[in-house]
Amino acid sequence: MSGSEACAEGALSAGCGFLAAYPLVPALEILKRFAARFHDFGAVYIQMEDEIAALAAVLGAAWTGRKAMTVTSGPGFSLMMEHVGLGVMLETPCVIVDVQRWGPSEGIPNKPGQGDMMQARWGSHGDYEIIALAPNSPQEMFDLTVKAFNLSEEYRTPVMIMTDESVAHMKEKMTIPPTADIKLKRRKYYQGPKNKYLPFNWGKDFVPEMVDVGQGYKFHVTGLTHNQKGYPVINAETQELNVHSILNKIRLHSDRIAEFDEKDTQDADVVVVSYGITSRDAAKAVEKAKAQGKRVGTFRLITVWPFPEKRIAELAKTAKAFVVPEMNYGQIFYEIERCARGKADTHFVFHERSRDNGVARILEAIDRAFKESRAS
Figure (cartoon, rainbow, N blue to C red):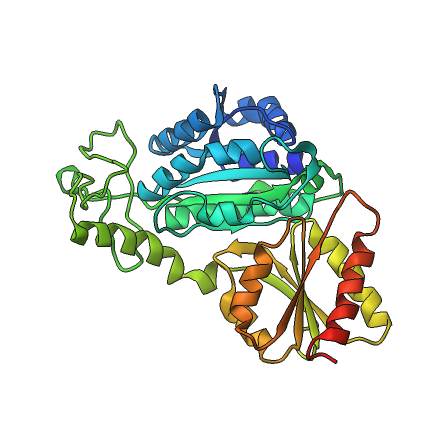
């Protein structure tokens, strides 16, 4: 199964009941798979006039009780940014899949890229936190799509799947578990009197209980700064109440949300940090470096946002250097550099998946880290 097919199957297995999107290469195959299957699950699929409308429709569907998703690529991802901020402010659970390609602007639609990673975190305006996952295989496209829906429900927030053209189009053997074995997070619904409902009643975990529109509850939602009833209250105190909630419901649980895969980092002189499709070439390069007698470890980001800064800071105390390959000109690299706090050197590798020398370039960077950094 291809990564795109696996993503659509993951969404349906997670209970996705609504998908709105504008068709855009290289994300088109996810829509095709969903369109071929949604009738079997009682779901709804609608092609919108553009990506702005697509995410707006998803936010609306989520408030009717549907698990909802949209799918896009670079230019469409840019168009969605205003509604990303709206989804965060309305604390609306949904999933956004970005199949990254070369940019900027239209770029090259059928080439893989990782140039949207910082846009995922900072693309909308104002202060907020986001959750973003980075699969590196069709199996993870399925697994992390299910996880994305679970996280969106648990923290009542948009969750992004930051994949790329290579992962979306590659085909590999994978396992779809029986439905009974797929653990799904159910939405936290309000159970009290209808006249007491507050759509933004922030408790200890900062995640308010929801209700569905049309069930007889009277409430209001707005992108403006609002009180717990959802009505606009424009003052500094209410602004702080809003921002405090949407920041801390992610920040206070970041250690629990962040997922990563690290190998042989305990005594490594150099740690290669990667994510997505690049992590596959990184693993091959590390194996070759080990065969040369070098002490090298791997650290693969599965959750990119929130960033596992505590673990990177810990590794910087023992490793001499980090090597960071990316299909961009340095985005997550700067996060590694920030978290290392000068205690370990950082070496960037521009990783071009379209060439055959991806592994060789990473291996060269590992060699350079040993020669030029404190690892020597």
